[in-house]
Length: 202
Image 1 (cartoon, rainbow, N blue to C red):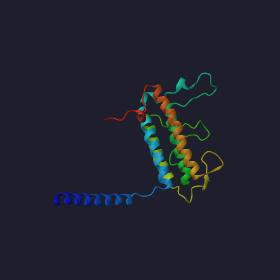
Image 2 (cartoon, helix red, strand yellow):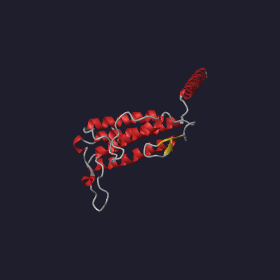
Image 3 (cartoon, rainbow, N blue to C red):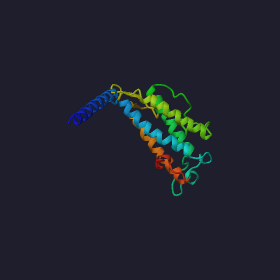
Image 4 (cartoon, one colour):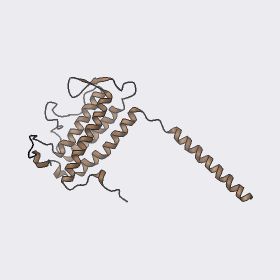
């Protein structure tokens, strides 16, 4: 009987300590905010897009379906894989600059041109680095959004109109997701499984 009582007291004491530690740990976890939710969504995209860009071999970075000319379509000049990646990055910089109220810190290409990012970036390493840095800039920009300025109007980087901060943040996420889908198609057409679609390694 004494042994049973000792075991029960030990279990009770242990569970009390574990419960107290769990409550303490939960108290340390900050409540989500608007900017952290947006940042988390951007990180999820970044973790898909950057590895996808890196997965394409250097010699296929200039690949475009049907050499950029889709038969039966009047749309000419389909972007190459490199241009898709640069386009995502350049748009990240443009929207980030608008949210931060500054000129993007890097070249974003001809605003009146085909919007394919800087022509000066040629190698895979240069383009992937440009992409990575654009996400870092986007994280910085989204961190400025809060409950007080969420619908504040700022100058749109895409024309004379203004747009809300939240609206531009949503464009960042949806635009990146749209072009990530195209990158996935390009990878598949070259026999490459996108990293996000690969089975987890044991």
